[in-house]
Image (cartoon, rainbow, N blue to C red; front, side, top):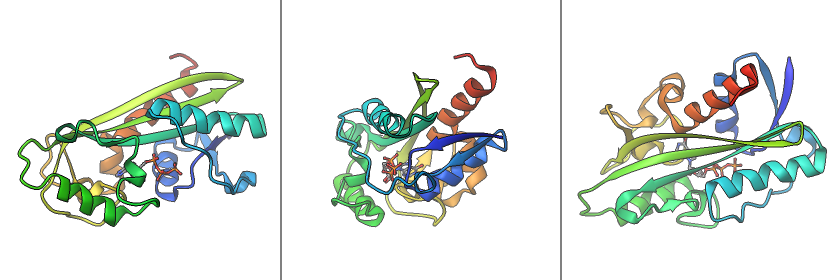
Length: 194
Ligand code: ITT
């Protein structure tokens, strides 16, 4: 089984991605590589951040790796929180505070369309590749469900009447931004073609 480093500290993301990858690849975590520091994410785009994280690992370990960055883009908020999704309300990854602020900023707003967008940067044999996945949807007026993480309790994907947080991990993965980006990554890793 081939090993690939996934540059994330988010355990939810790790298990979501491993589920889509199946047993063709074993994901190696940052902790397993001895990387305990926070990897800088200072770019102003998802693409820039994903590349920054993957390059950091590649420069340090010289091993094949990938990193992802995800943002929730709300149309009525001109694409916010976007690249700042993790630190929308506070400096940390406070999911409850982020959801609260999002609801507050959308109070009385009729157009609630939004999308999750994930960009994956892969460094394989020293070459860089980007993969994107997105899912369109709307922001609910209150939280529902307790599966998943982050903005899942507020995001209703197009064509559905429940939030991501009300879906099983498999159902979310089948249509999600990350699921779609990972599917492209897996296809590339298996076929060797973009
Ligand atoms: P790493 O940087 O360690 O990978 P992170 O939690 O910062 O983990 P991202 O930068 O990719 O993850 O995502 C930024 C934020 O967007 C994240 O903290 C969540 O609030 C939100 N988010 C990402 N993916 C999500 C998903 O599938 N469902 C709901 N919210 C998500």
